[in-house]
Length: 282
Ligand code: C2E
Ligand code: CA
Ligand code: CA
Ligand code: CA
Image (cartoon, rainbow, N blue to C red):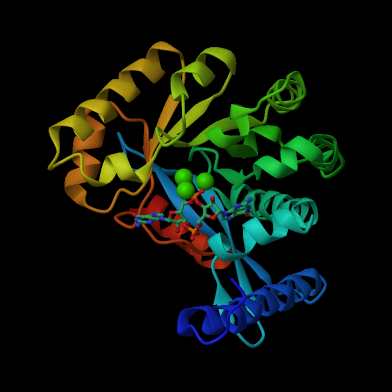
């Protein structure tokens, strides 16, 4: 199939090579990004649905590339996993987020609820890294209360979960760091995981929440997941809450927490601190 002249074929190779080259460049830029201070964490508020108090925030990473501008995580986290940078990036995220959550809690007015930050943990990272030791040591050394922090994992991680993964997750939970199951419902056999792994919270994926008002099946699934989780002693966060009507329906279904553009978009740490202060004055 080496015959030149067929247009599609001739154009394919240069385009493919260009893409491969762009990827290599992105990978080498990514290796410099930590040292050059190009990462930022944004925080998206998570509210308690019964009183709309802000009680948690999810840390979401951004990369400010010097030439390409803002790069969203979906475009560089998989690359970071591939080139073995995810450990270092994840450690940075954990340190930064656990630093910021202490600042918010120190500024909290008496009687207002504890603020918890949740960080996303890449499957690759928990499978290969030693992060649970590093992270738990960091909390101890910096005297950060473990209940300030939660870790979000995806079902993908649990798919090939070995005794090793179970042990690592249990190490977090024993220390008081909560484990949250992310994107619930999008994985392969969600129910099997609930049986096998002790988790504190599950996050119903936005794809179910999005259509729950127009699609009775989606609504039934959301309601059933909430009821089932509660029977297992698990709290529920709904993702992708974009309207008041969603928030109300979720609250009526007994959902514990909501996260989404209806409440707030992800924002820098200082903006989140102001957001918190304003909300607790209302
Ligand atoms: P995720 O963990 O499912 O995070 C939620 C994503 O949904 C975020 O996208 C958030 O901005 C977006 N979102 C929040 N509310 C709404 C809403 O109401 N409507 C819609 N349409 N979207 C909403 P983002 O920040 O682009 O992050 C994408 C993914 O990248 C995350 O999905 C997570 O898997 C990954 N990620 C982000 N930060 C990190 C990190 O520090 N480490 C790792 N390993 N992965 C991360
Ligand atoms: Ca997440
Ligand atoms: Ca999610
Ligand atoms: Ca997701």
